[in-house]
Amino acid sequence: MSLPSQEQIAAALKSVPLFKGLEDRQFQRLAQHTVPRRGEPGEVIFTEGDECRGLYVVFSGALKIFKQSAEGREQVLTVERAGGVVAELPVFDGGPYPASCQSTEPSVLLFISKQDFRRSCQEDPELALKVLASVGGRLRRLVMLIEELSFLTVRNRLAALLLEIAHTGSKGSLPGVPVRVPLNLTQQEIAARIGTVRELVSRNLGRLQEEGIIRLEGHTLFIQDLERLEQEALAAR
Image (tube, rainbow, N blue to C red):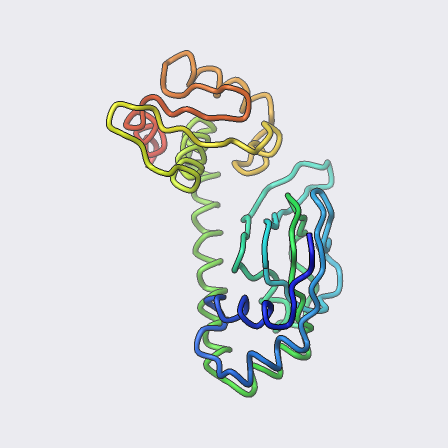
C-alpha cells in the first residue's frame, strides 16, 4: 500500500466534513504539514494517557477508538473510516488522549500536528466552530452508548449492532430474500462493541439463529427476518 502524494492528501482533506469551507491556500498549507503513515492491523496508534501531539484523518482503512479497564476488558467507543477524524478534542483542551486508538485493518492515516491545526483554526474561526460541532456529535453518541449499556439487554444491543452492520455493508436485497453482509468482527470484537463478554455474544448469536432471525456462514451474516431483528433492537426502548 503506497502512501498518498501531496495532491492526494489535499484532495482527501477537502472531502473531510470537518474541513469543509476552508480556502485552497489553507488546504495546501495543511497538506504540506500533513504526515502520511501506514497503520497495520492490530497496531496501536496511541494509548489512553499519552501526550496529545496531534490528530489523525483516516485516508483509508479503519481506526477503533476504545477504553480498556485494568482487568483488560475493552469497550469500543467508535470506529472511524475514510474521512473520519480522530483526537480533535485533546488538540484543544491540552490534555492527553482520553482513549486508545488501534488500526483494525490495513490503513493509511494523515497526521496533523497540534500546532498546525491550532494555527488553521486561528486563521479560520469557522473551523473551530466545526470542531465544536464534531465534539458535540461525539458527545451525543457517547450519551446514546451510556443509555444502551444502562437500559438495553445484551440481546437488544447485539441486534442493534447487527442492524448497523447490515445497513453499512448491504447493497440492498429483494423482498423475501435474506440480507447478506460480510461479518468481519470476531465474537470478542463484537463483545467489546456492545459492552459485554464473548460468551454472552456466542450464546445470543446462537439463540438468534435457532429462532430463524439470522444465519451465520463463516464470515457472512444472513439476516433472514429483518423485521424481528429490528423489533429486538427496539425492544427495551
